[in-house]
Length: 266
Image (tube, rainbow, N blue to C red):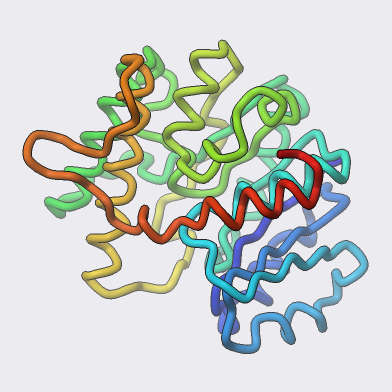
């Protein structure tokens, strides 16, 4: 069973196109996690032509970044899914072929984590992007996976997971994507980049500079947590004199735990 998980927070302008991107995918269910929406995202979804495949998980309180992925993955697991594809609600680009390649990686190549290279033959010039990529590279080199993955990470771009991974990696770790990557690697699960989508092709709306900075700090902090895990140390987001929090304090792990208890997966 193949399932798409789409986290959505106030995505009324693009959610219809995002769901439409799934129309040519071999999927049995589309799980949309409504993450504290206050606009008409829900109403638009419920008029989708794919309504027979749709499962809506609605949270009135925002779950925070990445937590909706863990929620959707747990629900997909409960449905019996063996392949789970993650597609953010603001990704409006024509990327159906690449999404198919991610699913194929799990189904035909026996992978457990299929990733997207969002910087194929592209070298970002902004200091912020360079800093984030340096931490992504540091983690992948520490995992001895840099030659296979480059700087790819489940934090960035669509990706897919196997049921086998969900059975071994804690649900909470899915809400800290680099940590889930580190855990999967130490469990000798199969991880590979199976497609490439230049970041601009995702057609995600541009955000302000503050958001970009907070996202960067979130990913850096997540990488630091993964690195401390690999060293057998308490999870830390500190590097030198700086603690990289970003959006991490807004992650509602308590709501994730309540949801898992409701599914009897806790």
